Image 1 (cartoon, rainbow, N blue to C red):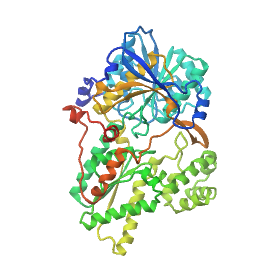
Image 2: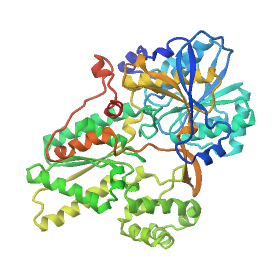
Image 3: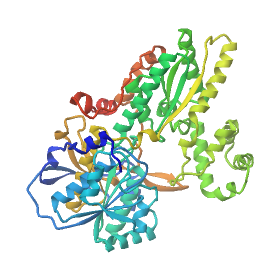
Image 4: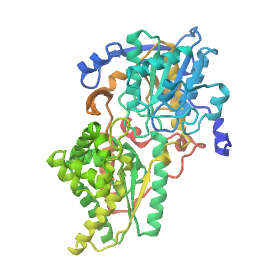
Amino acid sequence: MIKSPLQIARENYAPKLPKSLQGSVKIVEGKNTESVADQAEIEKIFPNTYGMPLLSFEPGEVKVSSARNVGVILSGGQAPGGHNVISGIYDGLKKLNSDNKLFGFLGGPGGLVDNQYIELTEDVVNHYRNTGGFDIIGSGRTKLEEEAQYEQALLNCRELDITALVIIGGDDSNTNACVLAEYYKAKGAGIQVIGVPKTIDGDLKNEMVETSFGFDTACKVYSELIGNIQRDANSAKKYWHFIKLMGRSASHIGLECALQTQPNICIISEEVEAKQLTLDDVVTDIANIVAKRAANGDNFGTALIPEGLVEFIPAMKKLIAELNDFLAHNEAEVNAFEGNKEKREFVAERISKESREVFVSLPNSIANQLMLDRDPHGNVQVSLIETEKMLIDMVKAKLKKMKKAGEFKGKFKGQPHFFGYEGRCAAPSNFDADYCYSLGCTASVLIAEGKTGYMASVRNLIAPSEEWIAGGVPVTMMMNMEKRHGEMKPVIQKALVRLDGAPYKKFVEQREDWAGNTKYVYPGPIQYFGPTEVCDLTTKTLKYEQE
């Protein structure tokens, strides 16, 4: 691999660690836990890993540790900092015992089942320190949900003498990790399973997991791009830019980018749902802001659109839930039709009257996109729905009516954008580089202490890194029951934008001013070298939540 000057310089960056991880560690047990909801059902499914205590680390005495072989898996979509998690695991294991070995399973959970792996040696790990991407071992979205998979994975681990697995992933991946931990503990298999919280969407968090890794870097990358577009909009003064941002199940990315860049419009999906807004309500609100700015001579602006917006519009949410359920049981019948028109008609006749009315009212292109193949969890792939283009067309039509009524006297030209992959593999910010390395070291301690069914946790993140609090949180603590593929399943509860939370309130205080006036902020690129106040900034979301 040819390295850029930045990558060469970043190899020499030494991630900062909490004081409790800088030397030997002792574990302090806290209170016993229970799941966030559906306690009886979750405890019944996870009798061996439910109710375990919270863990925190403190400096301790040196312990003799026997040599261990550990496996690691990267699961799901990429997020900046994954390589530093692996670096932290590797260094943490070697600090405990130089004979410890780390094996990386290739291509995600599927590599564990198919026994595709490499040993992660010092030469390999050093090549990837402080870099973006998951290319050290690759990732994948194979779900571990069948007993045959668990047994094959067990055989493969025993072949390599692996006694612990670390699964780095989001809410679904860590749910899988918890299921696997429960299965192996019930079986007495002698395989520990530890999770690490990853997702740029920011929806895997709670009091013990203040943020998932990658969110900081991705939001800074998107905010730079938004700032560039806003500078262009303010220069050309003739385009409205509709920017769809990653965030299928929550609007954390949109909210954070709005706080960083101060756009004219930012839709918060959770607010749309809470206010029971219709699609026409959303379009009308946007059109009114466009008209207000046009009245001041400003025929330009920026609008941030969360990727999962359509699932939060109540009528659309009901429709999508019905489609997910229907297609989970009738996918072959639907796909037997060659034409999209026939597929739409077949589906429309078999869903509720209320959802049918919504479905047939949609543009054919959007209705077709709602019927596309589901993701591995049985959900519509909202990233394939061109919400930004749909809103441009609908706002244009609304403004045309307003013009006839004398309510709009300007011009409107929409430009669509979708920022997704651009942020997933960026070189991690100093915050994510430090945080991820700490998470990896934390995972190695949890393994050394014989823990299973835990997720690595590093808290107090707005303080200097030396004051961060490392420990572990039982994955069952985060779980509730949800419908997946037509059946109720235990899953980690997603953390949505809280409408009573400080980040949202800060946004609401200022959005009317941002809508009518041009108060853009141009954040510029991530800074890796320089003063702390420039290089080690946390997200505004984390700052406001912890203040």
